[in-house]
Length: 498
Image (cartoon, rainbow, N blue to C red):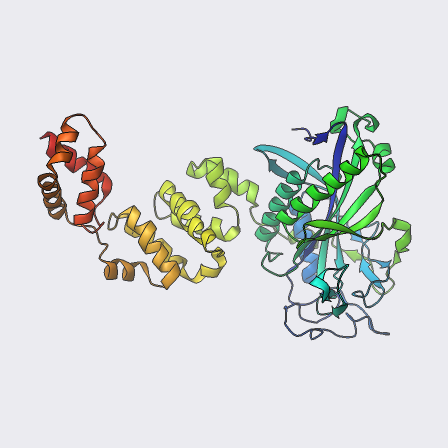
């Protein structure tokens, strides 16, 4: 599928991303300080991550291993040797006044990631992915807490030195919705690799470069190919401080509209860096956009070249979300929508496979994808938060599979009580009297419902098939909801037509 184009008149949107991913390691990238988040500011710091004179960095092996896994997952080239550089700029959360990063020899280059956009698959080119250290974090205080309105700003260096992987895409996006789809797929891949924790505050941050280019200035095969000259000539804005898929879509939709409106009114778009103010839903100007020369890159003298030859071949990656989706459709006969839900996280996919291994795969899919995830989403709970209770959910599926309780009671009473009250499924069934009523008792309730509701019987015999639903309701009341509605329907029809 070729790139989709969002147009307003003769204007084309072009977006490229720089995605900063915090890697899940116990310690920082160049020192032994913990990466655990803490409420106490400036607690997990040392001379290395504070950039004190004479302190020397030592590279974290786990961070390199995580980078190699990401490179393999995005089908990137991983060179035999790579180097670190210093990127020089002043910012209050960067204690050394330079950042140790990678410049022209990144650990990963020329990768790609396939995503689903409006039901069709697209391949997004990834130009590079490199290792670097995270700066500290700023806390804007007073004046509404905005970067442009705060009374003062505090600096916390606990985050300084946390290992980052910066993933830089080609300018392949033509709409904010495409960006959101890409970020969702990327996050799934990172979670499957075990190198990323989406629940960690600030674990994924996005800088987006957006340009609006007149269609007549675009080279190549129509508007699906953006020529280098057109890109170079276009003024672009960099939007920073984006921290979610939804936030990226909102920020870029605002910026897209802002630039198009300016162009259509004959005003120039300034090349600048803008801040996404999520609380107000707008972007605000921060500073003029830096160029590569402004950073004065030079090789990091305190770190030798990094060689991963041989070692990288020993690093394995698990089955990735796209492959697992395809396997679920082929192996379990699921449709694409169900397979996507069931592979949304590795925990969900693993749990589904455990349940599908014991019971009918369709029944397992209904209970995991629809019932369980639906109830968790309603309560804003992640499956990881009930990881220790998944055996209880399996037991609930077993009760349904073995016809010991009705699916309706299991879903509407037992599952909800389990999540809200912390009871086990067997406790709920026993305490609420939800065990299935015996056949003799159901048959007796059917006879009583027919005898007590002659008008409904007449309506049914007159061809009003809807009357049967009323009678089913009467039987369900008599049995305390423990009978199976489908069985009751059949018994009523047999009794009425016998």
